Length: 615
Image 1 (cartoon, rainbow, N blue to C red):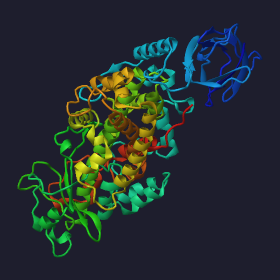
Image 2 (image 1 turned 180 degrees about the vertical axis):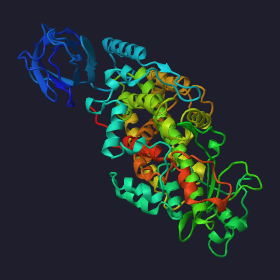
Image 3 (image 1 turned 90 degrees about the vertical axis):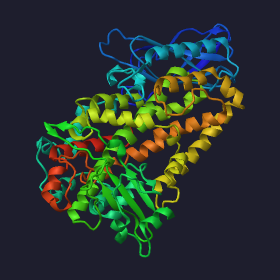
Image 4 (image 1 turned 120 degrees about the horizontal axis):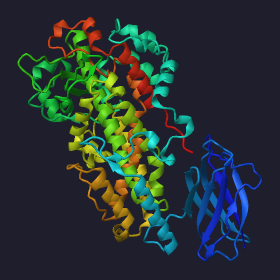
């Protein structure tokens, strides 16, 4: 009996091969012949399909899986891997065409067996051959994707020392596979920064001095707007709601006891005929507290101590002006001599105080909001999904597009960005020891609840804050994601008991909680799924975190950080203790030097670029 087979090769560079590739069909009743593809010698070319007829002595019944085998062409002394997108099979006559998704690299002398693309849980009717394939695939994956502790006190990750150790399926495509050092150098050239980066320990002369560099950078309207308005109090307040770190602001019903502020200090900045106490009671006062930074050791860059502050910033939702800052304290434990910076202070003193708040924002944004709360969390879900869910499981099919390349991105971050000699060590005040201490502190208080937008906004009591577009858009996206996820889950699980009885799914959640989030005592995610709604919520969290949340935090960083004075990555002088001694010379000696500025401009450009393509 004849079967018509179509094999599709991937579309990206180097997806094709001239190696020998063979196909065998395995059905309910037996196996077909082993058929070599491409008898005409053209090879399996990038982006093309290869069609052939495969003969079987007996009717195979339903084809259960397709076996693809690749043998190296001995005359070729170079690596020639092959990326297969999918295989379709149709019996002669009027039989139904079956599709077998592959999306897998075959390397050297290699073999892969792929099941029909129909998603199935263990609750569905599964033949012994299919069950054996699921188990074999998971056993192989679990031997490849193991857990490791990269650093104590943060989530576990995949046990790969660098991106070079990753399986080919986890690697970037060749267009995006340059090593970080080469990419960094190319970006410095593209941004015309390759000469300036050599100016170590040299300060900018003044704020306008950097404008000569900024003018040459690729800019968006947002970046241009920030450069023009970054000093304004209204825009300063706007960034807490709609900047790169819009998750810190919270409503303040009572001024913290360690914030040495009195109502009369801020009276002039409030609307007429009101007081601080009245505005606190009315819910119009907001607080951003960087207590998590208190005591974090500052980095040492080129032999020079860098400094970290843990500010408190009080903001007022003015009925006419919007959200504006009304008081800043740069320490958590004030003395009688600790200054409270106010909008009517000498302009340079108020500007420098706001810069210290923005510097704290950079540390929280990059280390906690970006690295820990999106990248490292997503990697836990990624590794557990690869280890515990076979490719035909509907939840695997749902999640894997959102977790693509997570491991390579994070491997590169661990080896190039946050390592002991990485980029953060060269230009960020929390680089080195401080970064890990900060991450440990956040991980201890991290909760599963805080990853759900509705509860995040509820717990921070910001549901009525005006012009909080991040909140409004997050909730809309969450609702759309949850609705989509709910429809998919309902297709494959008709009852709560089916969720409970899916042993693959239960192994998955157990791996997530007991391994990935080991020692996260406050996380609050049970290691067992008891009903459909728990599954729907968890899947929505995973997709939201790795897509919408990551985009909100990551994609605007070049806009908000390319004018380096708006979001300084490091501070080279301690926080001011005397308002009247702040000069432009002090400000410029405090802000990142020319070398550090160039590094951060280049890195935020690299990190904030549009996501890479998939095969």
